[in-house]
Image (cartoon, rainbow, N blue to C red):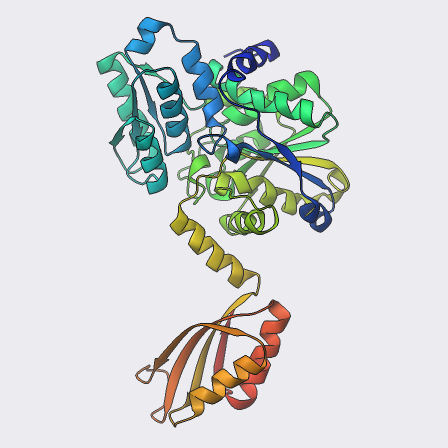
Length: 407
C-alpha cells in the first residue's frame, strides 16, 4: 500500500461534505498536573463516537454504484462496525457486520441501530474476521478492512490534517495503535508537513505486538491479546501496517490496564469527556513517559488523540469503583466488633465524626474469622483521599483493633 499526503487531502475533501472536523482543546488541569501543555483531539465527538467513521466514509465514497449495490461487509469488535454501518446508511447501501460474541453490547446495539445486519460469530476477532472473508466470497459484497486498506488509512489520516491546522507548533502527538490505520494515516501527514513533531504509538501492554515489533524493527507475533480496551485488542501485526508505522513512529510505548482505567476516570473528571480504553491510553502513556524521559515532554505541546468514547456502562462503572479505590477516595474495611447492643452505633459514630460517608455495610455474625462473642462488619466508605482514609482508620482502631484496611 502506498498512501501519500495527496491521498489524505483528497479524503478530507470528501469528508468535509459529510462530517465536521473534531475540536482540539487544551486542558489546563492536565497540563498543570503532568507538566506539559496537553491538548485533546476529541474524536469521541464523531457521530459514532470514534475516528473510524473517517476511513469508512472515504472508502465507501470511492465505490462505484454497481459495487455499492452488492453491499459491504466488515469484521469488527465495535467501532469499525459502527463506522461502516454509518457510511453504508449515508450512501444507501446494505452493510453486514460480523462481530465476535464477546463484542461489547453497547457496540452491537449501536451498530444494529444504524441499520446494519449483525452476525455474531466466534469468541475472538480473528474468528469473526475469517467468517466475514468467507461471506465476502459467497456474496460478492465489498470487504471493508479496518486498517489494511489504502482508502481507509487515507481517511484516518485526515485527523492529522486537522491537527496541523489547529495546532501547527505541536511538539508531540500520541495516539493508540490497534491495527495501525489511525497512526499510520496521521504519521504520513505529520512526516510530510511537520517532520519535527514526535509521534508516539501506544498500545495496551496486554496487546502490544505492534509496539514490540516497532521496538525491534521486525514483526513480532504474540500468543494472546488481552485488554479491556477492546478497540485495540489486536493480536496479529499486519506486515503492511508495520512497514508504514516503522517509517513514521518515533517512539513506541505501552501502559497496563490499571493505568488505562485510571486515565478513563481522569478524563471523565478533569476533561469532562468519556473515553473508551483506547481513547484514554494516550494519557496513561504520557504520564508514564513524563517519569521515564521528562526532558522529551516537559513544557512541550502534547496532543493526545482521544480516538473513541464507546465504552460499556458496566465497564465504566467498574472503572469508577476501581479508580476511586486506587486514588484512596473509597476504602473498604473488615472490622470485628463486640456482639453487643451499641457496638455498631459506636463504629458508625466514629466514621461520622471523622467526616467519611458510608456507602455499604454488611453485618455478619457467622463469618468464620470472628470470635463467638463478635460479629464481622464489612464496610465501603467514601473519603476525601488517602490521608483522610489513614486518619479514619487510625480513629477506628483505637476502639476496634481487629481491623483490615483495603485501599
